[in-house]
Length: 157
Length: 157
DNA sequence: CGCTCATTATAAAACCTTTTTCAATACTAC
DNA sequence: GTAGTATTGAAAAAGGTTTTATAATGAGCG
Image 1 (tube, rainbow over the protein chains, first blue to last red):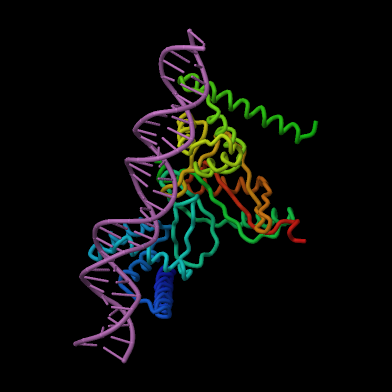
Image 2 (tube, rainbow over the protein chains, first blue to last red; image 1 turned 90 degrees about the vertical axis):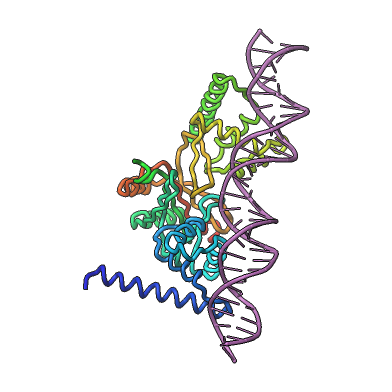
């Protein structure tokens, strides 16, 4: 078995786990499992990007044109998922909320000031350096966030 | 003369330069120099953060409560400054524009989650590393911001 | 299956930010 | 000072996104 296949299996297992967590969550709150909610969770899972409610809705329309899911349902489901910590949202500036799945492992962001796309990265050297700076200044670090703004590869063409 | 005094003088000189550039710009376009425009430029200069039109307006209200500058004037002046490249704006996500003055020296922030105090710092290693990461990912860096959250020296006692 | 109530799509309403309108004001040149 | 015109604050309008109201639908349970 190749690594790719193994990863693929892992991914399915991971999604099944997520889905059953979601079902359990719904059940314990006397809420119902609907095709709309499943599709929203699945689309969120399949996407590696941070999505706005609108872009998520567009994605769903493309993938499931016959379902005709309303934007209000997307908003309602995202709020539900966020309230139960299955998705997290990021604020970029005073407004502009974007959602992503999971109790995230930490990462920093490259944000394109032209198209708004977000690329994630983690850099061990920066993480270490941050620890060191905090220590040197007598600061007990709890958290940090870093954003790099610029023009992404695609937009430079 | 100490370094601090020298920096202070430099800062005043820098602002005077900026102001006279602004005046020249206005004159050459048959526009008028008003107290509102001066206050907006000055407040932008004094702030080290990226500001939304709204937060800039709030800042001005605090600093000059008697002037009663309208939010529309803030928007108008920011557009004017941006058109003439004296300020740059960044998009955060699909929407949400933030402004900052053109030539600004960069620094990062340590923010105390207990007392709210902010310590500024610059670290060459982190700056270099950021450049490198941006380059590796085909990203043309324009700016970046980093915040470390935690408990400051004073508050730990 | 049939009952009950949560959920849905749709559309209207509520919200927010940004722009425009307009009469009053104030800067600049003379 | 005065004339001419850009600028201002206030309020209305425009342009978005997000939420709510509603009647119809559908999931879950016995």
